Image 1 (spheres, rainbow, N blue to C red):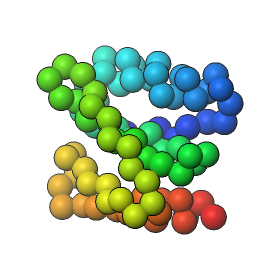
Image 2 (cartoon, helix red, strand yellow):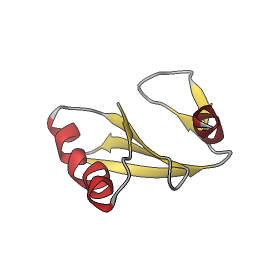
Image 3 (cartoon, rainbow, N blue to C red):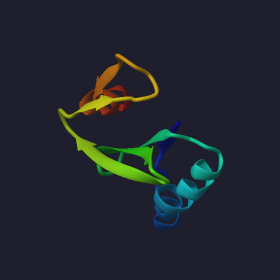
Image 4 (cartoon, one colour):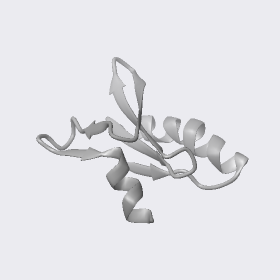
Length: 82
């Protein structure tokens, strides 16, 4: 699951806080929050009953537990948007 943060304070709050509950209820074990404004990706992984977040920027490598042997550099995600 990938969530792209929408502009605006209300949208940011929804995307970072409230959707977490919706994803947990649906059994999503991993999702990403792509934040174009901050140029960062937060990887949220379900661990022992809650999401653990890892914030990645610039040249950090994103690895997925859901898609084995797959990696992407954060900058590559934002380069496509430019």
